[in-house]
Length: 337
Ligand code: NCD
Ligand code: ZN
Image 1: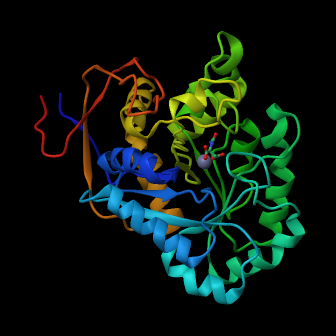
Image 2: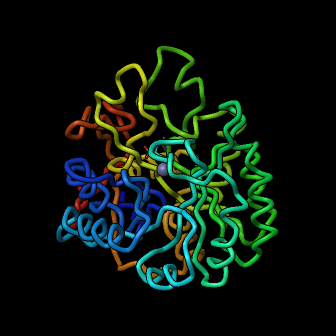
């Protein structure tokens, strides 16, 4: 059987961290992806030119020789037009976190009105807005409760490209068809999981993330949109590594680590649903069009050959640890078996 090939796959939502964790995880993404949108929720956040450039250099050093483009983002705060113009060529967008809704978001936005002057400048400069769309309400309702905020933003800034990050609900899927300037990313794990997988049996800390996995009908709506490569939907892993001791403890950190196995698992999932012909658009084509990107050519090949997901990468436990995946990523230059 001929290998299945993807051209320049892109991960449109990725956490690379800093220090030892960055050194561990960056090569794992760079191995199979041509580029990724890098989240700015570090401590302190990436919200100025010096921090942006230092982080970009650290990522480049961690990636080494691999062909991998880090598409940098800034952490949303009120910025001046001069600041935005100075940094525009070095970023793909600005990520807005409501204060306190997820890991390292304490410096996020408390009142949307205070964000609007900057959003107006972003619209004028054509800088995309990436949003962690959750209210502070009941955990299962947080994303659905945020839809009026997306609606307000889409109407107030009709020329601002707005990306609903890591969507988890059927309401968000439906919202994709309502405004031409609204797009979304979806993760691998939200295409596979419901709350039952996280907390229906023994608690599964490695499946705990923000936003939390929702109901079967939400998962089914996300999956249908991904399998059909909805033109406004992009793959974004939200791969968010935390060391094992921060996950297997009281006060488990939110985040699922999927980067090294995301593509083989996506191939497996799309193959299972006879939708492999739509995977290229979902993992690259849609993002190229929405963000107007031209990633470097990078062909990534997969063979239908069972492989077992490693139990750990360094200090981090990956999604699906120990599980058998039906497809295997061929290393560059490795001939198909
Ligand atoms: C992310 C992290 O750990 O940085 N966690 C998560 O559960 N997804 C933050 C985020 O994207 O919300
Ligand atoms: Zn994230």
